[in-house]
Length: 203
Image 1: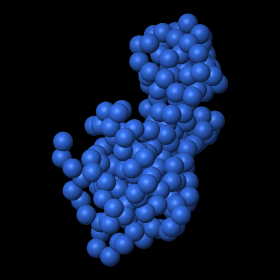
Image 2 (image 1 turned 30 degrees about the horizontal axis):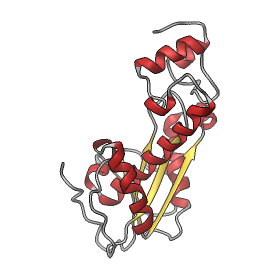
Image 3 (image 1 turned 60 degrees about the horizontal axis):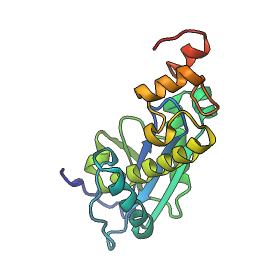
Image 4 (image 1 turned 120 degrees about the horizontal axis):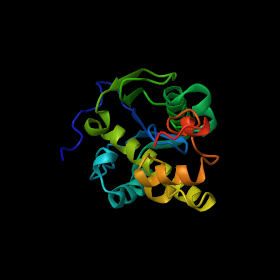
């Protein structure tokens, strides 16, 4: 696994990395995090959250919160996802995270192809969560925060297995959907939830 290699842009004393978690699942909010790392307090082991084990993510998240110069986590609700679509809801969560930072960043670097509307210079970087340390840190915070929410919701909505699959369309989740029907945290705008509500059985 290669470590993040891209340095901050010249002159960017406060580079803010931004990433999301939860665009693909059939249930739950979409989360985003913004992180400004402190060069004087480096964090070993940062990488794309998808390349890390759950144990590694849970170990790194407290270190990021303790050692970063600034960090923030935000989300967009299931209702917002269904109303404005998942892309816009993701960008909304990203903007909320950046706006919640305790210090204003000089520059914002976002993983992927789409940038949120923020009051700072903003750039998108494909594979940024693998290449930029601050984005790697943001991906870890967003992922661990969303996983924590899904574990909590598992107790509130038993029988779906949210603690295990985190809302993704696994065979176990689809079987539970067919057996129990959608619950309050399912995204009505997502297939196959929408088809199921319309009386179709696509699985």
